[in-house]
Length: 405
Image 1 (cartoon, rainbow, N blue to C red):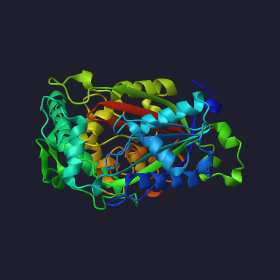
Image 2: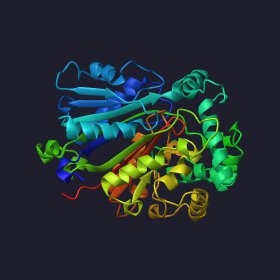
Image 3: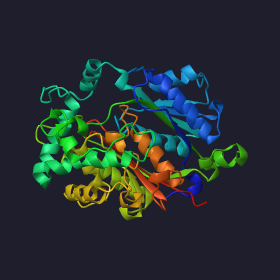
């Protein structure tokens, strides 16, 4: 494992409001970047790298180049910009790429930026563009393709591992309970199990409240070298940078097919491999992690991640969720009893297309800097964040930690 002085660090982060904002995605990206820069104590001219994920609502060829040109980072021969598209895993993939740019490509400070405005899109346009992303050419997935793809996987896992329909529906209930403690979360009132099971059917075993909550929003983080942080006067640094930044200990990625194969089996899933790689690079075990940010675009993604990231044995995620559903019925439960997605995840916090894994990263930073308020997990020193793209098509996992130097 590299020495701590060689590890990249998050030195600032920022996000816009969520909701129906009626603004172009680029505007949301710009605002998020400005907030992240203010948080870090850096200025735009201090950045020598930019990584973005593409927008669905306002797509641009070479998104990072478009944004960098628009905000004045380019032309500049010392600046590197890159666009990453691994779907919802994109922000975590981008975080790992930014770390590589700092450690191996000579960059001092790299911004990772994502933004989208999908709830401001007409629903028909949103569905058409979303379907184009994961459509099976054979036509096996009806529209909306993504919910139907996850639904196929859900039914397979329900049969293979004796997962009940009620256990699946408990996931958005849990996320809605978590969201109550975050002032920016879109879901303000906790769901009951009956609310979820009686919401509008979208696919055979998937209802509306089991789909990521569509939103507009933007988010950004600043990744820098320790030398970059140390070279600046502490009086000009933000609070995260003053403590030495949030250290990126390790990461891993893996890929699967764009849509479920005709016969589903274990070979299509990628989270397990990505998590193993991240734990190996960080030289940690799941028991060493104090907080988890798990992608939950649909309940089955969250359920699969629980076992992949070591929170429960394989095949036991339904029982794990059912136990937490019972433990958190009284809404005054301790965050330490449920240190997962304390912001509410995609199902309850909000989901601007490929942005939401960035909220996992930001919530991890809040936890590791002891700034999560009523959501704070006491003693949180290490966090794992997981992003999933497509229909289990790409997984990216990063492990973050408080600095000790």
